[in-house]
Length: 494
Image (cartoon, rainbow, N blue to C red):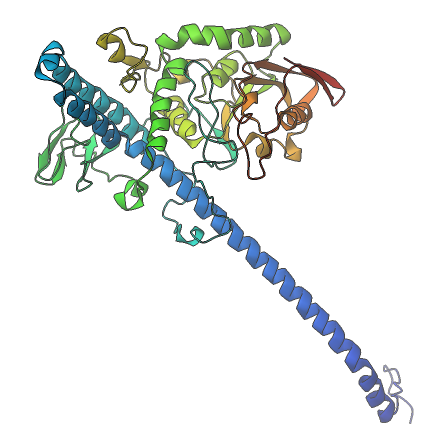
C-alpha cells in the first residue's frame, strides 16, 4: 500500500527485537538511575548539612551578641556590688580607723551617682543599637553542637584586653559586612528609652531620656537602675508601672532587651564594659587629646604628605583595621579620604555606632571613666572626675562621602578577592600585635593595597598571644626585628 500523501512511511522493527533490546538496556538504565539517586541524595545531604551549620553558626553569633549586651546590662548591678563590698570592708575597720576615714560613706554615695550616670549612657546606647541579627533566634540548638565554643569569651582574635593609654585587641563575633556610618545630618532621632532593672531582677521599668540629672523615682517593687539613683527622667512611677510625661513617647523597649534574653555573665565580661568606658576618653574626650596627638597626629601628617593632591571628585581610599571606637577613621575621612574602619569587637561597634550616628551635639553625654580603679589617683576628685563626650559633633566634622565601618575579622573580611588592589593606604594603629600570625596580616595588607599604595603602622609590639599556648602547646607566630619580602615589597619590622 502506498503511503498517504504528506506522510512519510515508517518501517517498524520486529516485535521480538524490540523486547530483546529493552531487556538489554534495562540493567544499564537502573545502574544509571541508582547512581543519579545516590548523587542527588549526597548533594541534598551536603546542602542540609550546610544549612544546619549556618543555622548553628548564626545561633552562636546571636548567643555571643546576647552575652555582650548582657554584660552592658549587668554593669549597674555589678558596680553596685563593688560599692557594697567597699562598705562592708569599711564597717569591719576598728572605730578609730573609721573615724580617720569619716568621708568614706559620702564617697560611696558619690560613687553610686557616678555609676548611675554611666548606666544612663549605656542604656541609651543599647536602645539606639539595631542588632544585625534576629535576637529572638532559638540558641538552644548550639548547646550540643560540635561548633560550640568551649570558651565563649575566647574568639578568633582572643580576649579583649584593656591596655590603658594604648589600643586594644577585640573580642566577640561580628557580622561581616560594610556598615555605613554617620547618618544624614538631617536625620532626627526619636526619643529613646532606657531599661531599668532592680538588683534582684524583679522589675523592668521604662524611662524616657530628657536631661542628665540626679535621681530616679522608685517603683513599688524595686529601685530604678539597680538602686543607683542619678537618672533624672520625665517620668512618674505608679505602682510597678511608669507614666511617661511625654504622651507621644510611650514606645516599649526593644524585645531583645527583654530580661528573658539576658544572661548572667562572668565579671570578666563586665570588666570589658568598664574598659570601653575608659577608652571612650582616649577617642572622644578633651582629656584624651594629648594621647591622640601622640598616636593619631603623626599618622594624619604622614597621610597628608603622601597624598597632597586629594580631590573630592576622586578621593584616595584608606582602610583602618582595628578601628576601635572610630575616631582615627573619622579623622582620616575628614582629611579627605574615603575611609573605612574595620573592627571585630561588638563591645566597640555598639559604642562607636552610638557616638557616630546618634550624637546630637558635642558634650552631650557625661561619664565617669575612672571610678572603678583605686590606683593612680592622687585624690577622690581625680577618681570621681566627670568627662563630657564627645568632644566634637561627628556629623559636623567634615567627613568625606563614603566613610564606613566594617564589622568582622580582618583576616576573613579582607582576604576576599574583591578586596585585592582596592586601597591606596592602610593604617594600623596599635593593631598588628593582635595577630596570631603576623605574616598573614602583612600578606593581606600587601594584596589589598594598590600598586604604589602605602601602609602606615604605629605601635606596638606587645603581641597578645606570644606567651599563650594553644591546644597543641604551639606558640603563635610573632616577629622581633626582621625584614620580610612579600609581593615585591620589603617590610622592615622593628
